[in-house]
Image 1 (cartoon, rainbow, N blue to C red):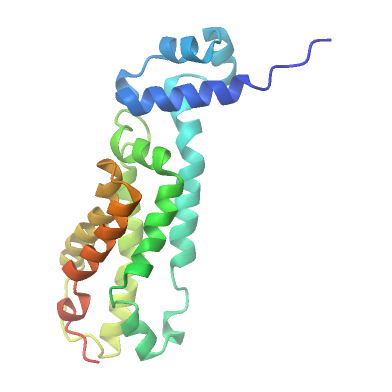
Image 2 (image 1 turned 30 degrees about the horizontal axis):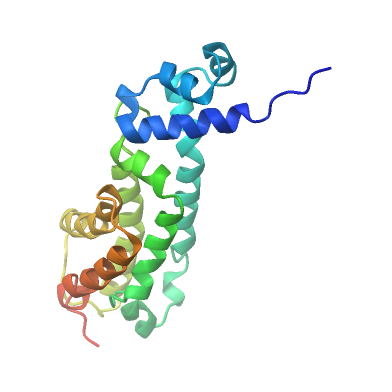
Length: 205
């Protein structure tokens, strides 16, 4: 009895990823993917219902990992943070920002697919959904500090959303523009100089 070829799925996924990165989802060709993976279209459809299912198979493990990271970094018990700890969470430090860059760099290709090449798929709004999740957690830190009287400036949720969206854009754009790791490290230091949340929130130390 012939043993099943276990290399088929990895070949399909690898070739599909390269096709999507090169052409984007909408212009990618299943015929090219099958040709490069050296499989028949029947073999592909036996495993994936179509092009979108194939795209999702590549990116959804990364989406799950990113959302898990976001939830893991969220502080569930803000009331237990000291005033000093709460204020310190707004001090821009390169090492803190680098945690995000390191995480996204580990899944760089899948991350770029989601940010740049997902138009036409169910994940085409991933960018906005991720920003909304991150903003929701971050705004909770502001609300806690404002209630304690640590932050003097009153900022409406809509205005804060705009400010935070601009901040997260500085985290995503290096991947869209294919920055090298040394360039990203330098970029992280620039972000710290550009975003002065202590002044924005009028934090009294």
